[in-house]
Length: 487
Ligand SMILES: Cc1cc2nc3c(=O)[nH]c(=O)nc-3n(C[C@H](O)[C@H](O)[C@H](O)COP(=O)(O)OP(=O)(O)OC[C@H]3O[C@@H](n4cnc5c(N)ncnc54)[C@H](O)[C@@H]3O)c2cc1C
Image (cartoon, rainbow, N blue to C red; front, side, top):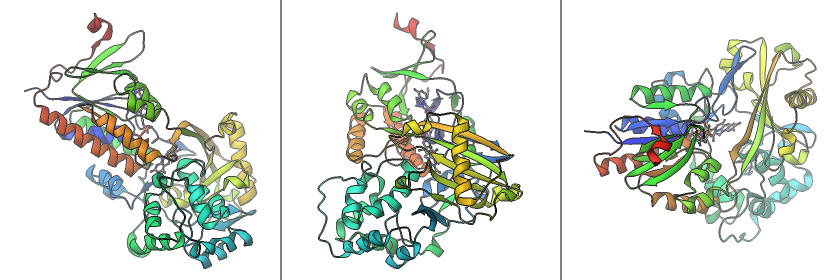
């Protein structure tokens, strides 16, 4: 009996997680990755002898999917957690402790907020008006800035919410969707007139901080090692992963799908019973344009932000005082080039233990709509990062080693209307037998969310191929020359 052939396009964490479930579920799986390496936004390399992630570095541990995957791969014992979660905000000219009691920057503890000095006296005085203001009407989705600004004043938006959301989306609070970026806040704010009360409700419903366990986790060699662990499992289950294999076209056939791969001068056709498209929105739109135009049109409207990460490894002695927190965020209104700093050797004790004589720091530059800040040389970006650390930490020495990683179009923007847009994409995709989408463009760009989306896509495709019975594309496992099959 032949086995159904399922092709996964994209070997980021979403594509690999989907491929793993498909292969384990009995499908014959081929993963096609356009770039020379797997992992997408998960990538790690050594700087100054330390394995420091070039992209994602921390997985949320309060959602189960990421940890479950590591556990299922047999590496639960390897997981490591941050040594400190204390972080700061650069506001009104100094580093200030992030106030206790906030959720995505929205304060719930007014005393802690006052003590933090993140807001000006006028900004602080505006916040409690939220407790007495009438309900803020909101029919459908609204921007984060509009809703939170109306409740608590613009300073909360600019100096707390923007930097925290900026750390995830590098986006503009005027455009980011409340429903998509803060679903729990959006939901709680429907049942509470006051936003402070809504946030207090969210915090009260969650576990007590002491009982909740660590917020984040990573792997000792970097989160960039995770895709390789998943890929090993895919191949162990019989799957094939092809890198350097760009998918250029996806077309419906009476009995499944045909993918056109590789360079235009030597195209190859590969037939599949089902396809999981796990690539960012722009390439997904191109692949779906011919046969699922309604989804493609919506995907084209998902914008992406670009950013760069500058990793600097200093001699520990370069810091007059060792940093104590995990790092700090810089609100856009401060008009500094660097928008976030992570003291990796402080945040991750395993890095510090590897070499206590050095301190690794990651600085990020680049926000949505400010691509010009990245249009300069690596040396200029390093100089901007060094200037930032000189100003806030008094570091006057040069780093021992440094690295610049650019993520052009790295972060999808969940702008107002995103949830409805994704619903329309899914509706159009679901109407196509044997087609699913997964990845950061849809229901969350954090790693656990990408894995959750991958699980759902793989489950649906397994149901489809199993329900369909015998496959017409299962026997040979070979691609064929597109030109010859078209004749
Ligand atoms: C700098 C940075 C830091 C981040 N930090 C964190 C963090 O700390 N924690 C966290 O949870 N999340 C973080 N994220 C978000 C998270 O890493 C990503 O959202 C997630 O990894 C995306 O996975 P994905 O599989 O959807 O897509 P991607 O990782 O983008 O993978 C898609 C793959 O598809 C390939 N591809 C594209 N087009 C084609 C084609 N036509 N044919 C074949 N292959 C194709 C690409 O080459 C790529 O490998 C960060 C993101 C960035 C950019």
